Amino acid sequence: MTVLADFEVIQAGSALIGDPTSGGESPWARSFNTGGRLADTKAFIKLMVQGIAVVGASAEVEINKTLIGTIFSNTSSGSFIDWHTQTIIFDGSVLKDGVNRISIKAIPEFSSPTPGNFFLDFSIRSVVCFFRQDSD
Image 1: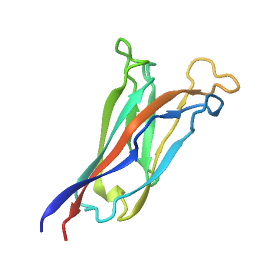
Image 2: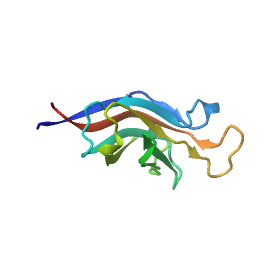
Image 3: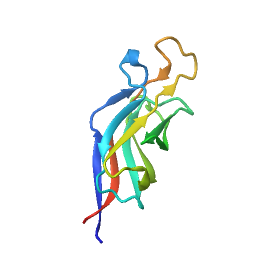
Image 4: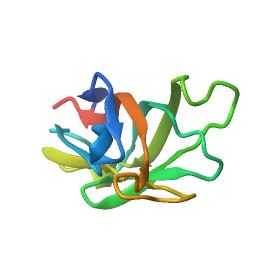
């Protein structure tokens, strides 16, 4: 049996996650297809993140209502405006042989939430799922 690698682009452009009053989605969720995927191998999500600059802030990532990992803050110089690539590796069995649903939760505002400002806004782009599949 020949095993192939495949990928599905879930989000090409930017999306804002956070408060709806600032145009953000809470949570951000999209559907994507992994037809023919092999369940007994690893898969991974690769994405770019901007704006999680608070120490300790993180956003949970789920596929098909299963937690697969976390997007972490980056507090380096320029971290609020720079884009950073993050990768989450998970079991291929989380993926369905067909349509899946990914969701990234908003990050609660740590300091002083106010009406319309309940979440730390951040952006994602270039969200891609890589998975293995059988060539047959």
